[in-house]
Amino acid sequence: MTTELIYQDGYTYTIHLARDYVGTTEAIKAGRNMLMDAPLHFWVYDSQRVARVEACLRKWFPDYTRGICLDALQYLREKMRSGSVYVVQQEKNFGSFGGGGSACRSPDRVSN
Image 1 (cartoon, rainbow, N blue to C red):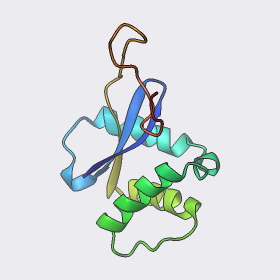
Image 2: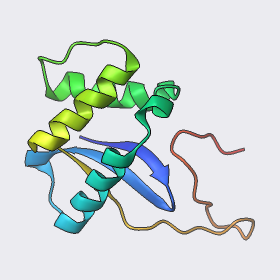
Image 3: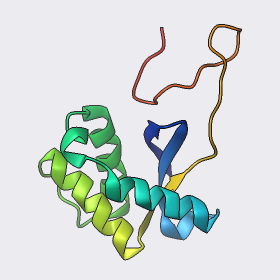
């Protein structure tokens, strides 16, 4: 199971269970840096993002119990620090605006 966490600065960051991930260590390091620097106190206001994180945590870690939104994000950080979960930076996404191509967008937003 791979879940989109955030689209930021042209990159999509995804959550992976460590034992299932096959990819580069550079992508893992970039994802780790992003999550460690992330302003979680702002992320808690994005209910869709928190719900995606909680869905992963409940599926992968039976000991996870739902708390406040910040708890889920901090638990994700703890599992990343322990090596159980990877947050991975995907290849940079480019799109075209208006020329018939698909525009880059946040997975949290709906395009009109």
